[in-house]
Image (cartoon, rainbow, N blue to C red; front, side, top):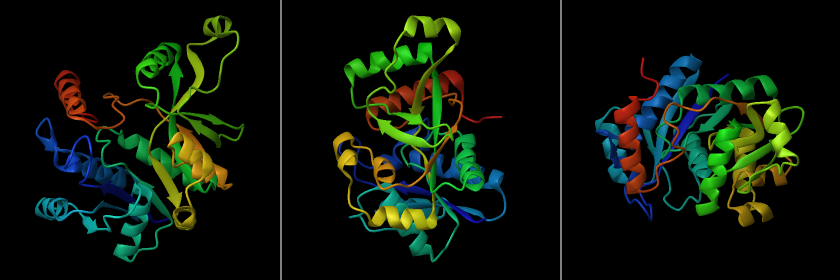
Length: 270
């Protein structure tokens, strides 16, 4: 099986312009994500490649100067998934699987990327994505966070086959008799989605050709387009990373990330 790991790296950002070239503890964001993509490719073995897909010559030149595989894509593309497909076509490849590894998630554990590809191989699903089952303490933290920032953090629910049946910015499921459940298990029934996607190539093509779906537009979650159009999405459980920052969007996020690197060390360090 051939896999292409694509790192979409868009220069424009309202809150943090030039985000891929922003430095975190001395390393640019794009170099961090490209490095974890290379390490994931090495673990997955022969037939796995990785590339940065950018829309800007500054990122293109930076990658070339630093021996990072890179391809130029149309700045008008609406999403990272569209950019991932454009990278496939720009390289003239036909991989079995395409992984969309978000370019602003430099602390994604390598194990998450590997787990998504393995899930595609084993499940036969159209797509795959990871989740973390939250402890009760972590659920309490998510609730407190959402009290201040309602549209930050996504949860998912699964069917008995482990396939995702819904994603939401709300915390799902609602929990009756929660005090009794807390006594039975350290883990809550809530699964927090990790924004990493693996697709079969034909699925990615069909997905990108579809219009924005109704609930996708309401919730602001592009993965709902998959669910609303009948694709199967295998949800694979993973463990949280040592530096649990889902994405870098602001200068404040960079400051937090640098404090955590100083405190905890580099992620996936030996």
